[in-house]
Image 1: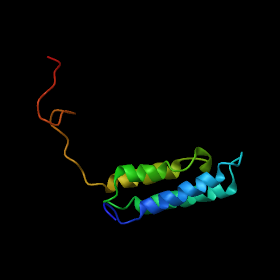
Image 2 (image 1 turned 180 degrees about the vertical axis):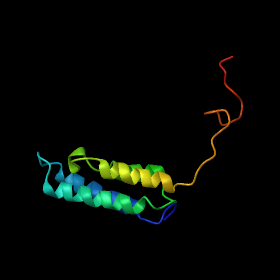
Image 3 (image 1 turned 30 degrees about the vertical axis):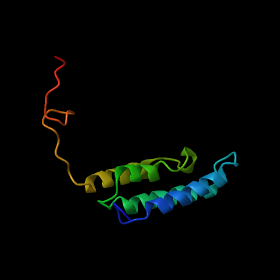
Image 4 (image 1 turned 120 degrees about the horizontal axis):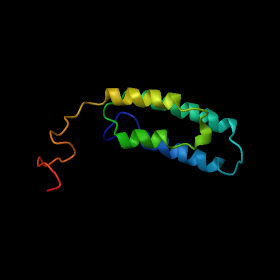
Length: 106
């Protein structure tokens, strides 16, 4: 598993299959809410992994439809934990320009 401790790809495949099986239902199901809570607990677990890429973390967080959660408080909490655990990166001295030359619009 490159870049992290957890097999996020496996979890993503499982969630994708589950969501596809639930697409035929009109109203949010109790099963979808349960899976939503389970995915949020998984996010809590993987938020500690310093090797996990942001794209993978966000893919898990966004893997469920809005109907799977009644609120996003737990997602915001684990996102905060995830960002705190990531190694700090040095900002560029001149803002967004990584090559070191200032772009003043001249």
